[in-house]
Length: 183
Image (cartoon, rainbow, N blue to C red; front, side):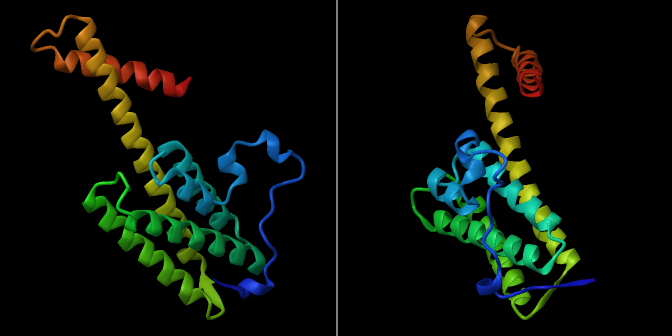
């Protein structure tokens, strides 16, 4: 089923719910996804993941032409910001990952531009949302691996840097980090 897309000029701007004052929300929840990405330089996995997941949620919840328009515009701005950060020489992301993310950004822009013709299929909205969720998961997974690596190294040092105990240290660190993240 195709969903009608209104032009950007006719869509109402996205608003934060009035039930919770903006001062009580974390900045990632009150900023647009693009503002988060530009502020973090796509180097703060938790905040960048929240921005991507929020955009995915908007896409999945878009059940009217107005909501589709707001979700697509929000997602487009997010990915334009990601692409802008990636083109910046200061980005800490590996060159191969940068190239892949730039290609994904181009896909998002192309898919969104196709929708300006008047409609977009629901499966395309889901595809964009899944893309965002996959990138968010990858960002958080990389963060978790870094935490485990740092803790394993700390354990190794605490035990006097013994040889041949790498797997024990890694498994212990993995259990500790996983337990902390679940708590």
